[in-house]
Length: 78
Image (cartoon, rainbow, N blue to C red; front, side, top):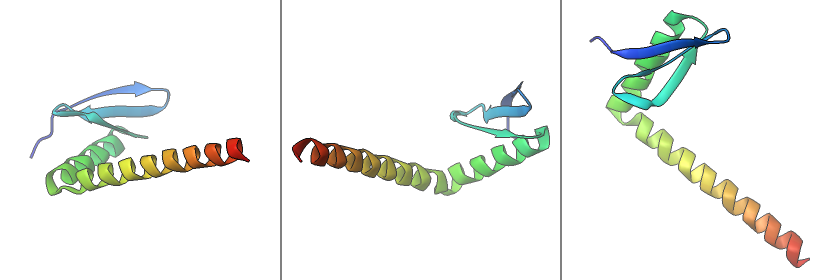
């Protein structure tokens, strides 16, 4: 299967995304690294792994926010 993607160089890195999924950019030290990363992301999208990763990241962000809020509340009430 052929993936259509957009890419560019920034500093010494190749950056890009799958044209159908621009919300999932990646990078590589070479164009080959970038293409491998894009294929991996595509596989994660198709098998549902990426959705699980997003849910885990959202849970971690929520826990970090909650922890920060609780620590702030504890400092201000002491």
